[in-house]
Length: 323
Image 1 (cartoon, one colour):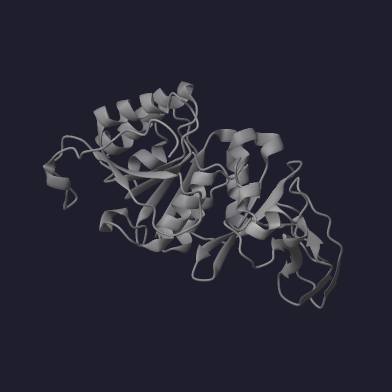
Image 2 (cartoon, one colour):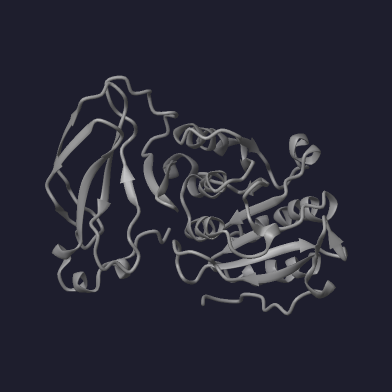
């Protein structure tokens, strides 16, 4: 899904793959790792041999990451499931699960599990999530678009990276949502990071809002890489309409990477229902071609004390192709 590309390698490695090195370490206290450096092969694979010694009975995760260098975009570190004498069993039993480590700024990191074999696209980290994660951590933009101190709802959460990052960056509480079969993965990732005030709920866009969300609408909605299939455009628009126009949620931040020629139809429909403003992604993390938009309720001169820009729809060009 575009998270690793040959073009991301250091420039010198384009001619010599031996310059793209990987190293191993541990995530956890009291663990020592001795590992041989491993060269990243032209197919993006590598074999690494490591000896691990632990002075603790607690669990740890073996971490494999790219060595510092002139990477155009540093590959994400990957980790094993938690292991150790007293390690809890993996929080779920999906096969071929990958664990990734994500930087959320300020030296903080998240660990997220993926389960693409069992859940398909819903069990995978997508590129626009990295951009939105970096943006919410940068704490820039308008006050009503910042997560700190707000109740945050993430739509189409998948593995939940953006919602979990919002909680790390000071959201008062976060609800991560997806279809029913993805909820166990979301719950596992909440547990894996030891975060409180984060709840995973099933939210099917083709059905009414869950009672818990309708009764307590959030202050801010986050969504990334949710516009990829024309068949779900109408249900997604209806869900956004219920949240923004009926339940008066002030704003939704939508991160989007163009993948489908029908994307423009979605954004045309979006403009008819909401005020849509293009935003600049603050912070570095995702690909440069990810676009960010702020959606606000239409037809309201003010909302919760925040005046809409000039009281009118902004000048906005619908994205119609790759940047």
